[in-house]
Structures are given as C-alpha cells and as structure tokens.
Image (cartoon, rainbow, N blue to C red):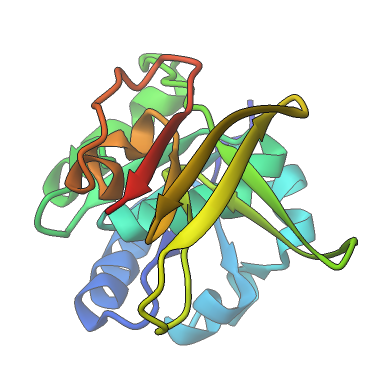
Length: 207
C-alpha cells in the first residue's frame, strides 16, 4: 500500500494554515503528501500541489485540519473518489472531527496498518431546475436548505418522493438533512436527531 496522504485545511484561517504547515513538516519525513494546487501555494509548497482530477490516483487518505465546516467542504471534494477522511480538530466544537491536533502525528501510522474503523456517512445531492432546465447541482454531507429571498412571505413547497406527493409545506423554508446534519440546522428548527449510520433523510419545515 502506498503511504500517500492528502492534506486539506481552511485557507482563510491563519491558525489553520500554520497548523497544516507544521503537520506537513512532521509527516513529510515518512509519507508522500499532496495538497490541492491553491493550498500548496499558500503554504509555500507548490511542488506538492495536484489538481482535483489527480486526487484518486495520488491519495490514500485525506487529513483535514480545521473544524466542522472544513470537514464538510472536504467531504464534498472527495466524495466522488471514496477516499477515507480523517478530521483533525483545531476548531471549538469538532462534532465531525475524530482527533485533536496534538494526536494527529501519532494516529496517522494506524491508517496504514489498518487499525481504524471506517464510519460511512450518507450524503445528499440536489439538482436545481428552472423552467425545465437544470441550472445547478449541489452535494452535501449535512443538509440542503430550500430558502427564499428577503421578501417576508411564506413559501409553498410541494414535496415528492419517487414522483409521489407526500407533503405540502407552507413555511419560511425546508431543510432536507442527512443523519450527520441532524444535530445542526435541523435540530435548531425542531427536527429530530438521528444516529449517523442510518440510511435516512429528514424533512424539516422552517417556521
């Protein structure tokens, strides 16, 4: 097994950049490490940069330095390649991260000896159509929210499952959440908490 790692961090957070740079320096002695081109440039390691299309062939595991928001962005990035992700917490809460920053160097060797448990999570994808034409696609690990503009007016949202109408909501919006996202916006709007391993989705109207 190739001992190759990807490293991903929050670009606009100076602490995250510094911590990622320090971790890279420690791990480079034992592993081949790659970063996306923009992030490699930020930490002064352009030679380690790769494009998104090169992720599948160069990375066995992705280390994500940051908080929950950084993990969510990284999950969207690597979802098409089925590459395991390890969240390294430098944020405040870290619901989605597995290890604290000072444990990372000790934990990485276990990835290559198989001493880890893979926690598979359901993701959600949205296709947005306007006048019969698809204008956008979205992928999320936590939730997708159907909202409105600043106009103070209730929305009418017809909701279908497999082309069958199951509900008609009149609300400020609708949250479609995965179990992973159930403790976030969904919970704040009065939705239920689900165990992360469940294969389910939650529909929660907002107000």
